[in-house]
Amino acid sequence: MKIIILDRDGVINQDSDNFIKSVDEFIPLPGSVEAIAKLKHAGYKVYIATNQSGIFRGFYTVETLHAMHDKLAVLLKDYDAEIDGIEFCPHGPDDHCDCRKPKAGMYLNIAKQAGLADCSDILVVGDSLRDLQAAQTVHAKPHLVRTGKGERTIKKGEGLDGIPVYNDLSDFVNKLLQGSNI
Image (cartoon, rainbow, N blue to C red; front, side):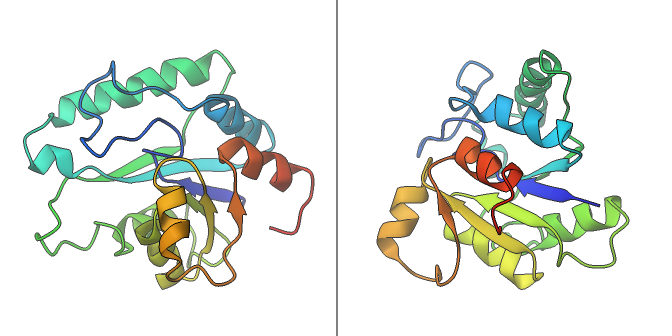
């Protein structure tokens, strides 16, 4: 089974240090919806794992988050594609939950939903160190994109040894589907 876990903000849609708080602020990055559709048409199961502490902080509600995801679903429907599952962490950074990345609870939940015994064959695409760390924790295969917080992550340079870097989600998908050794 071919499974990819995508971070949301900065990988699929524009990111903001002030949080994505409404459906109007949920703006897909160029080519990201098409890239997800290409993955689906190539037989991949595509999941999203996203920290959403804006819920904890009172910036938006769970209902608003679902409306953002509904917007993505509508956009994907135009390409005859859909996301296989979405895991989100609504907790704050000091809540000590098991789901907030860099902890790997969301990745483990996705593996369980997919019927996998472990995460070693899962590809993970993120734009921050915490996405990559969560993947490494469960022995998934992390990949970094330059979009969102990706350039900041690269400039910090911590924990990136051996992790491939791509311009954006489209670049990653094109290389994967062209048979690059990912």
